[in-house]
Image 1: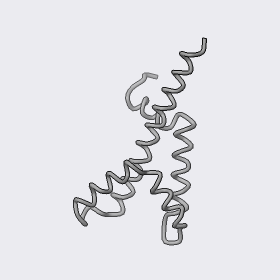
Image 2: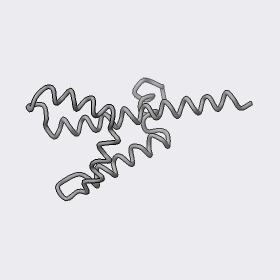
Image 3: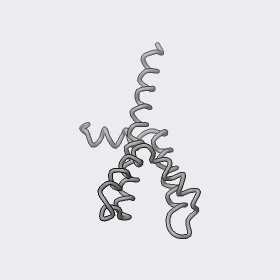
Image 4: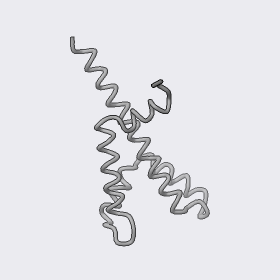
Length: 105
């Protein structure tokens, strides 16, 4: 199988324990906090996991006006923020792993 940018993104985002734990916690908190009967504390923590990327994107959407503030846009921003943060955690995990490989003889 050839290695390409999509495969590299998928491996970094989903292929390590750090990113998987982050995404699992985000999904658990979203499921617990979603809906009218959801736990508000879980919903707040789910939003806090998306900071700072989610806050930046939400401020952009808020500046566009009320027409852009739909539920679908908010869910997309949360999903994008979670995936972006998982990708960054994957990059960090790979850098730490490679640094450990260079140090050990």
